[in-house]
Length: 122
Image (cartoon, rainbow, N blue to C red; front, side, top):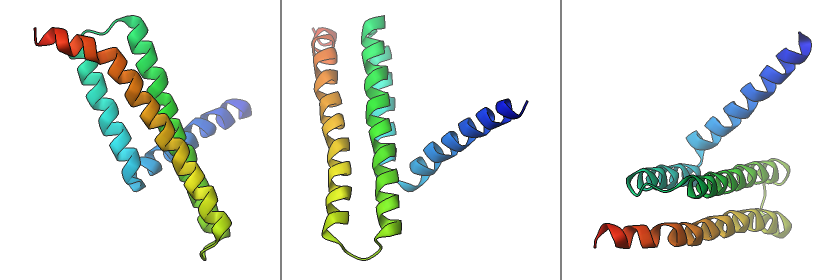
């Protein structure tokens, strides 16, 4: 019974973390908004099961990297509230990882959707 409570609490805290990130981080809102647009486009363009799987994996990678970035920035701000070059590097590298995953997702989405969009207007 105690193990179930611990597992339940783990999920509760994880969901609270995702929600906190969404409430406090502008970029998380942007990622979620774009994810919703991609989902709508996928429905309209009738993408297949494999394409949905690719989209879902990319959603998880981008949102997950944004969550890691938020946690890294929060920790750095806690331990180094004053300006510090190494703290800046840690935050910039974490932000760079998010940009890299988002650009990668954009490129893949272009490959997935371009032909379908062109067919839509023929």
